[in-house]
Length: 144
Image (cartoon, rainbow, N blue to C red; front, side):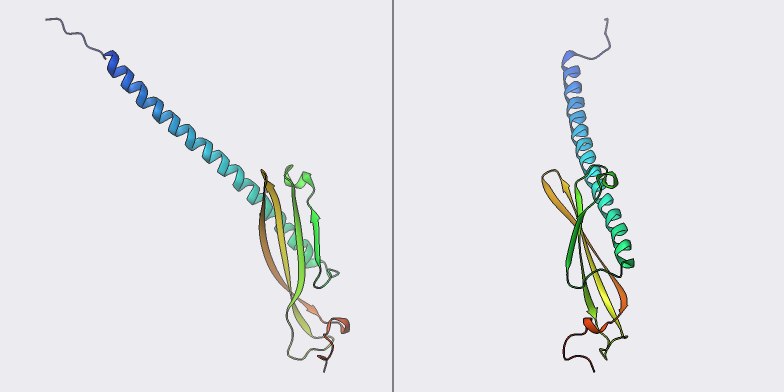
């Protein structure tokens, strides 16, 4: 009796089909991972740009009160990504005795936006800083 060892054609077809399904599943997972990595890279870049812009604004004592300012980031900073920012400075807390020379607390709100495909994504951050009140910043009737 001569028994040959090996795989039958049917076994080879089944094994190849199983392998093809596994490879297709891995490729789909790899494509999704690549898309997520690109999206997270854009988000990380926006966070870093927002922090840099916030640091600049924290030092800018000429920033107008209760006015919205907007701008765009230089494409060389964004890696070619279309992105910009919007900022607003408000008084967060006033001292108990509102008069010139007293310290108030400002709130700086920065919103960074960027385009991800055809969608506009945003990231917001807030910061607080003290500032000395001037006469023109005191609401009428509040000075003592």
